[in-house]
Image 1 (tube, rainbow, N blue to C red):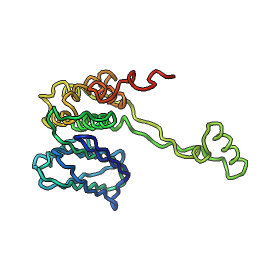
Image 2 (cartoon, one colour):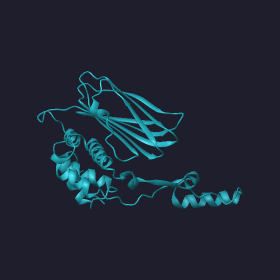
Image 3 (cartoon, rainbow, N blue to C red):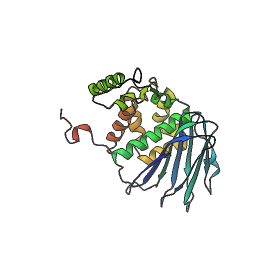
Image 4 (tube, rainbow, N blue to C red):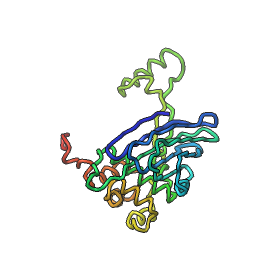
Length: 267
């Protein structure tokens, strides 16, 4: 599994991507940052069928519930007991599955102490919150990101002439012959609408499950409204992901608008 982490003020986000199999489970123990009050654990299966087992002691009974209605996503929103030091995560699969794991820890801070996240962190947290809502509603948002590998160009035969022709073709594209022969990832997912149920939930936070409003509030008090408006700006299609989160984070002041960035108007 490939691991990465960012820590930015009141949030720490760990990510891991890779494959799990029947004989190779994913097991990891995450240290809970000092002062963390909440955690989000999300497992997304791009391919295959994975199961999620979260071990955390002490664990509130309501935190044991599966919040996702999308089979390929497992989701937990945890209120951490004071003194919780670690979260042990185990992912298993009956067959081979390509998975992405996100574990985010939040510190609930008073408004006066809240620090703005960096643009990168804001985008990641808004994406996590919206993905959680979509999974809870059973919206197949992962289909919008589906890709498949098309085979690269192979030589006609093993002759020197065929190898020379392949190198000449690679030179035309400004790449190596090895790169020309490598599989090419091509997006195959069709545009996926967020559904009216998602829009309604973002429009009426008081009518959404309590954990939804709480999660968005941990990002920023205006995060839910910002994501709602951003979805309208991009016509409500999930595959416009970067535009969604850039607009949302600009509107709550965590990303600089393009006009304010250096060389914004440069050709």
